[in-house]
Image 1 (cartoon, rainbow over the protein chains, first blue to last red):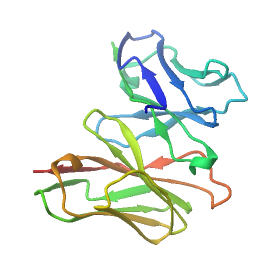
Image 2: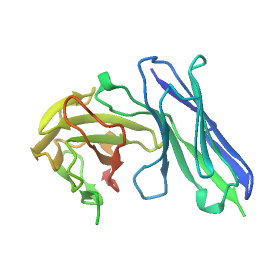
Image 3: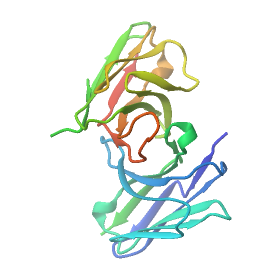
Image 4: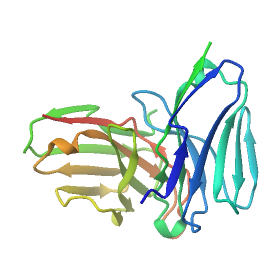
Length: 113
Length: 116
C-alpha cells in the first residue's frame, strides 16, 4: 500500500518556467510534510517542509501548497534553473511512527537552458 | 565537516557473503535511521534507533541486523546477501530523544551495494 503518491514521474521545464510536483497522502495521522531534493550520487537533502495547520509556505523560489481536506500537497519551483535539475521526493511522517519518513516515488526534474 | 557519514561508499560482493555498512553522525542527534533506495529510486524505511534502542523495525528480512554501539553510530550488518539486496542504503539522523523527536532528518551520502 503506497501511502504517499507522487506525480509526475518526470518533468521537463524550460529555464525560467514553473515546475509543479504533486503529492497525495492517505493516512490522516501524518502531521509533517517535507520535500527532499536528491542529486545523482548524493543523499536526499531537505528542501522545504510544512505542517497541516498552514496552507502555504514559501522559501525563496520554493513554495509548498497544502490542502488538508483533499489530502494533497504540492511543490512549486518558480523561475526554474538548470541547477534545480534533480530528483524531488515528497514525504510524510507522524509522531506515532517515530518520525520515520514515508516517501513518494520521486519526480525527476530536468530544467533545460 | 561531514554531518552524517557512511562507509563504504561502494560495496560489490558475491551472493551468500556477509557484509556491514557503517554510519556515523557528528550532529549530537539521538535518533538514527536506515533507508533502502531501490533501482527505481523508491526510498523505504528499514530501521530506527533512538539512543541505542531499536524503535522501528519494518518488514525487513532477519538477515538484516542493525547495531548501535553508541548514539552516534548505527551500523547495518547483512547476512547471506541475495541479488535483491542490491540497492543504495542511506543512513539518516534527527535531533530529539524518545519523547520529542524532531522532524528534519539529515541523510548520509549513501552506500551503493551490488550483489553479484
